[in-house]
Image 1 (cartoon, rainbow, N blue to C red):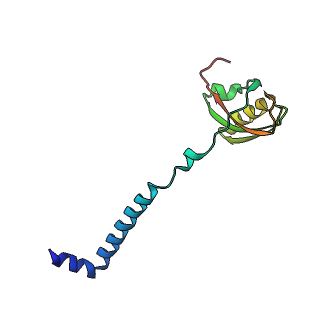
Image 2: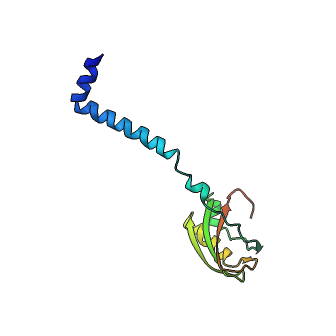
Image 3: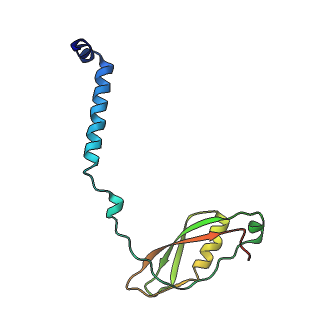
Length: 128
């Protein structure tokens, strides 16, 4: 059995494979001691929405059975007024409609300005 080990010591491919295997084992061992960063993140509670406005669902888009989810970030002033809405994702036509509606939302007052994540679902099967 010493012959294959001696030959592996001289074979570069064998040495590379052994080195790679050792590195992977070392990374796996170290990763078990690294804390999960997502578990450490602090989630802030969302502000209470006092008044909402339903977004318009353009008839041509609804009739074409185009729906989906729109994600927005709303910058809410301390007074609860929405100052700005940033579209994060979704169909651009639906996102524009959702952003216009959220600009008219009213949140509960808070001590500081916050950024609130807003998710709006458009379902073409729902009645207007």
